[in-house]
Image (cartoon, rainbow, N blue to C red; front, side, top):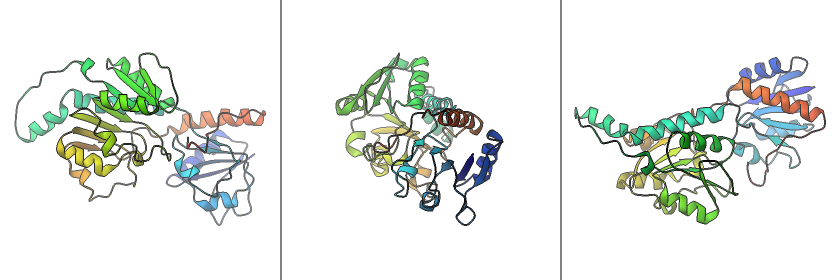
Length: 308
């Protein structure tokens, strides 16, 4: 078995992990010059260049080292008939749940106000409102979105979840379609974006849609950055229609050090750390998937036309 590995930032780490997981396989790190005549059976990759698929022409399956697959499906060199498998949870759902709940509690318990009061040496307690008054709307109900929705619901907050197709989740009001999205936006005091980047989600959260949120609402972004129209978000932060935001993912990363969001006291910026890939658990899933494929069974692959 031959396995090729590529990661735009951490190829050595991933190559070592794949070698440990497949001790009997021939595992190599992809480099344009080094692997020109060496063709692999499987690829374990993250954000490869177009040349990768131009060289690796005998792949059976591609394993994506994360949940987001937009960098893959956007490559014209990716063969249309080549199955792409993304990671399905593997612990990222727990990380994302922690991130979202932290952001939710930050605003629910008025810690944004207390942070500002500290700068002003202002000792002023605020009354704690009822959790029932803080409905959380979650965009995206995949493996991670479902886990986040359940965690938030278990914490005592009302939850509305939106997805492209209808879902059923205990403790969550699940909606879909344009009417469902409209309902979620109008009733969410906290909006959580966990959507992938697809043609239908890009700039979905724009001036028109974000204005549907209740006055003084909050935005938490753990999904793709291009879902949000940043200029619209900044406008609504300035007017106070949106009280604050916690943003982990941006359309261009790293976020430019001169970007006004860095200095906005209403915003928490984190460097794409909400749900990193736990490599050991990811490799357990990949090993299990390869075993199925070698037995003639194909695990669920992404739908390239949908982008996830």
